[in-house]
Image 1 (cartoon, rainbow, N blue to C red):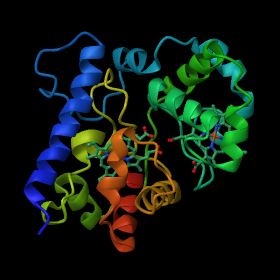
Image 2: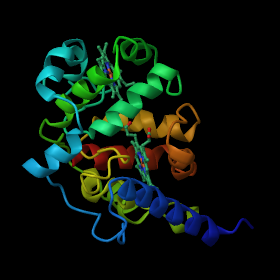
Image 3: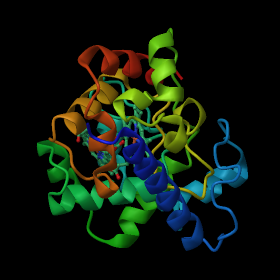
Length: 232
Ligand code: HEC
Ligand code: HEC
């Protein structure tokens, strides 16, 4: 039989490595995993950190087109359009670059990403959405989804989502920007992305980590997760 424990160990090592890389890039090499799983923080210091180097005032102007779908303050009104409010600027920039390069495919967003002319505009737009109050959910939650989110399922070689996406999916420490905020995100969007990762339609996560995490999820587990995550 495939060695389950070594797979889990590999997954955890990868998580540690991803986080260590992110942390040391910011000059913090001392025990990168210590204290990174933090609760929902939305104070001025955290907002500054997650907004990156762009100018949010210029970004507000430059993101008029984007606001038409993603909402004036990054809260979309449509289930398949993601909220961007309080998302890490670095993550927004990475996704836009992936859409521009065709590494992430979506007809509308490939076209929208192509309208962003240069790095400065991208940084400004990302900063504008990042500095909004973090997206919030108002759903009923889901105990099965919460269980998978917190503990994963070692028998299926799956890590708990909390290890990378933080408590209630609100992200890790603000300086660690590669793991997107997912708590409070649109339920339909979460379901679609998890399905896309599982079925191989989305392959742009670092080292294919999300493809591996989702490979053993059933439709009903995805539904429970989407309900739990979107409610946070
Ligand atoms: C016509 C509607 C529409 C417009 C306008 C639009 N988007 Fe999107 N956006 C979407 C949809 C739908 C998705 C989900 C695509 C997918 O499933 O990959 C998306 C996804 C994204 C994502 C990925 C979010 C994530 O959590 O991974 C980012 C970032 C983004 N859009 C930024 C922008 C920016 C910046 C602009 C303006 C230049 C913009 N969008 C304009 C509809 C739109
Ligand atoms: C080892 C770290 C890790 C674990 C564990 C993990 N994720 Fe992720 N996840 C990521 C990374 C990194 C990305 C960003 C992918 C990219 O760069 O496009 C991501 C992206 C996502 C996205 C897409 C977000 C968006 O805005 O498009 C969803 C949804 C998601 N993860 C849900 C989950 C769920 C549910 C679990 C648990 C079953 C989980 N993740 C476990 C690292 C992880």
